[in-house]
Length: 275
Ligand SMILES: C[S@@+](CC[C@H](N)C(=O)[O-])C[C@H]1O[C@@H](n2cnc3c(N)ncnc32)[C@H](O)[C@@H]1O
Image 1: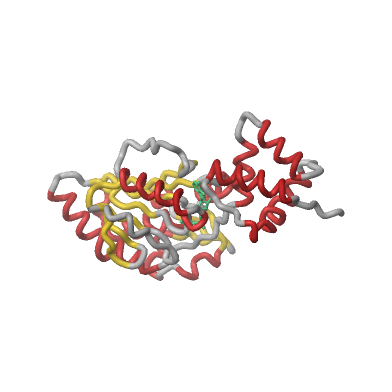
Image 2: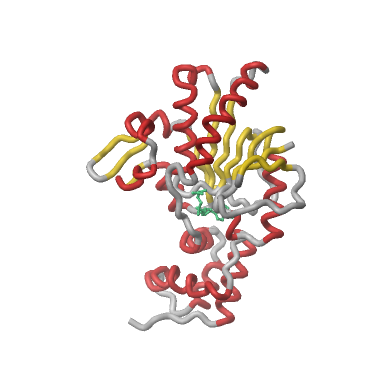
């Protein structure tokens, strides 16, 4: 079968569209990714060229074609307890002080947001840590864990909560037995943990964040690496407005916040606090 080609002009049209809609930058040196990741979509859709495909996306008023495009080009790699130090700090430092503070003020609620949650591993890991920390006390708390992503496929997997057995290799033993149900060579997240996370499709490029609540902790890890500096700065500001005072903001290990973002206090690598 003849291989499709991606001309300069087609690369420019598609990468500009992805940038405008989702903030994701596809550098020219990575243009082969567009070709590799979209090859099958073009073939199965019967498109003769990337120009045909681009025109089809632009003409689709439902927006589904655009969502399918971002689904194909976004990188969804994730893992349970990825960047473990973050979960240790969340369990040993943030939860004890936050819960104490909430108890003192009579508001037994915890609001957490996993932004760019991919297939749910990050949000479920947080739910497990909270469940383990609160134990029998949990029933007296109002726990809200929101997990959002742009990818429909990733969210579908997240909601199902079924993973290949090898995902548990990074999971600390104490979380295995209570929260993972083994089913041949798959594992399913326990019902208690599943029901504590709400998954929603949400584009972080939306001008307005429509959430009524403010969050005590926001995780947006390994998402902004695909954005340019301006997009990142605007997004970090929006996260700031969505955080409670003293709330924590987690980014990926390989990311840093720009020095101009003085509203955040540096806590530990890739952990910041709203001041
Ligand atoms: C590499 S994964 C990170 C998953 C998880 N946070 C972690 O660190 O393991 C990046 C995720 O960001 C999502 N993403 C990229 N651009 C987005 C946007 N504009 N709005 C919402 N999610 C986006 C992708 O779909 C992908 O699932």
